[in-house]
Image (cartoon, rainbow, N blue to C red; front, side):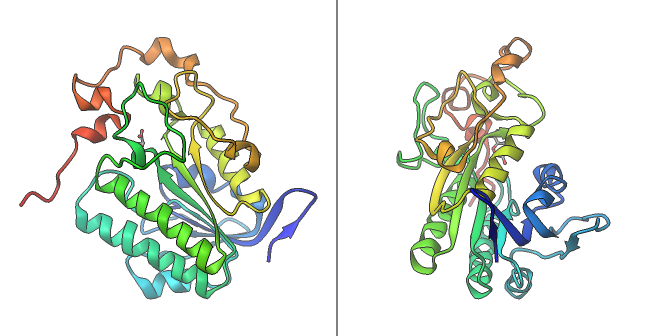
Length: 273
Ligand code: 15L
């Protein structure tokens, strides 16, 4: 059960999926502050368990393994699954079936909250000169973005039907520095990533909500609708500080330059008939 200080929650056992990935490795040492025991899962090697850590490898497509993964857990940070445009089979297995397995495990074992790594590719078909709020209709830019839109809807279903809270984070470009001109709008610095995930875990009464995962970027494509303040997230970085280094790094002319999803617009299909 979570314990509450004056305004923030602390969890008994927190599960981090995708713990061996790029963002998982950033969050692994930081999430210990939010819980007593940190359970780490991935299909990739996780290294040795540090004090207060448990290692439970599991493939998201394996329902029995994912159900067992959720036993004894009271909150989940879900980074696992396919994180880019790929074949339908891999997306179906990890991001569609795998996410359903995770929410079923959460329901069966009384998990109270999920922080779900959604993606900006849920709205990648908006033009770069449009400003999008979390309440605007989704416009996925591929099967990956579509799977994240499914995840957001699944989170809503499990909140309405079973009371499991979820913060869906539509993460932008979470890298040490912005890699190109598009990222001047989409960048989420790694310290801001830690702030955002920590806020999503520790704020009281989050319900089921969607928040943009970005820093305080001057050129942002996205408008926060007040969710950041409700979570207590205050971004400290701004991609503009890196503008001189990357603003000339543009995608080729076409949808990948004009639309918010950038290079994802030029990827796939991976399952040509
Ligand atoms: C994502 O959803 C991907 O996981 C990440 O690798 C980046 O490509 C990011 O979006 C982005 O849009 O920059």
